[in-house]
Length: 562
Image (cartoon, rainbow, N blue to C red):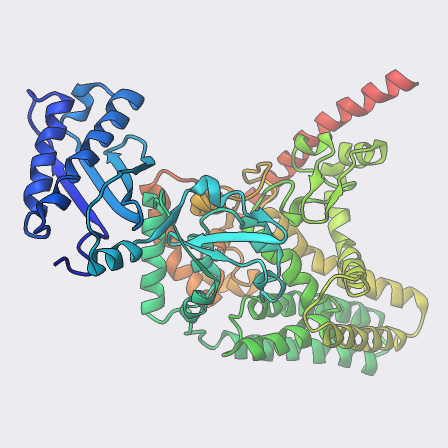
């Protein structure tokens, strides 16, 4: 009798090294090896008789349909995997892989009167189910979202509504393997929750690139070393620094009548918001506190209450940015029309897949973009106004927002204490200047965010899971600085390192930077590290190039229409 697993899978792997065998002789040779291997399993001659038919079919497929030259087949590794799928008619699933050649997947039915033993039927039923990447790619729409993680296929259609990172990452990555992105954004504890979404299917053509292998190995080493949990004392230092800055600002406004002290208090408030934004960024990536719940509380207190910018809005846009780094139509951090455009691709009026609306490149946009290299810094000085507006629009929208009530409450708290503080100044001149100075100081951070991406590589289209590392390295720019300046950049000067390991506390980013550089060098990938000055120059050049292209279109329109 057969064991319960004897017929579920047979594998032949032989290196054909002779230079004198034809392709047909090669398969005859492999067939003999195959039969010798399974003689110990099959005791019934009648069952054993069907096995040569398998190799007849495989030979026909590979030799007559694909027609590789016999000289290529020789000296290659040849694998044949046979799975029994249907016990009723002895249907075999055959997979052929000849070294670098494509895979051949096909079904064949062998009619037979062979008796089926109970063990034989049990082994047939135990075979895995497979689908191709092309079939997986069809499940990429809202209401039908499938993903693959390490070759196993999961249905996350319903989970998208509850996903802590929002539905945008799942919508953007659906229909493909997302292993690297999953590793980047999820702790080890998340793996145990995947089984409830498993469809029972595996990817038949699942492959892992050399870059992904090294990336996953590196992530595993960091996790084993406990680096994702070791946050250091950066949170305590940041809280103390923010408390000092904010209290000094309030004291300067309330206790002094000096104009210069009031303006300096505006500077302190600007730096407070910068440091608070870094803390909110850490909390949003679950780096700041010991649990997701406390990170959520910290995000609302830091983001909504102190800065007036909703942590819900930040997560909504920032997660999309990480997933689709520098995609012109999927990354909201590059979609700034009518004021700014980093590529002439925007001149085609792209449709934003994030906002679900057309980014119209109309005459107004042409005018502003034509002078964007001159207006760049002034725009950054008032960019905070746009963030306040985006927060209010989101909180007032019909979109499902996690913890909407707490986000609204936190925002109300900000718009209570901030106007009260400004109203304590003696006149409207000082009040307006106080607000403008605090906004201008914050422009330093807005500039930094743009330096990390504006001059990097861009592309049009959705993100893909099979080149995660490549897209992150191409779409980011690091800012080189001395270690004693790390507080000023909040860890985001190591932009590529952060994008590859977004859950890694910023205290470790400098230490892993040489490792990431070596990995990029090994695989001939882009690694950009510029000084703050050099990054500004590169960004202005990018904006100027697009401005001159838009200016040509503008004058062409003027000459055409008078």
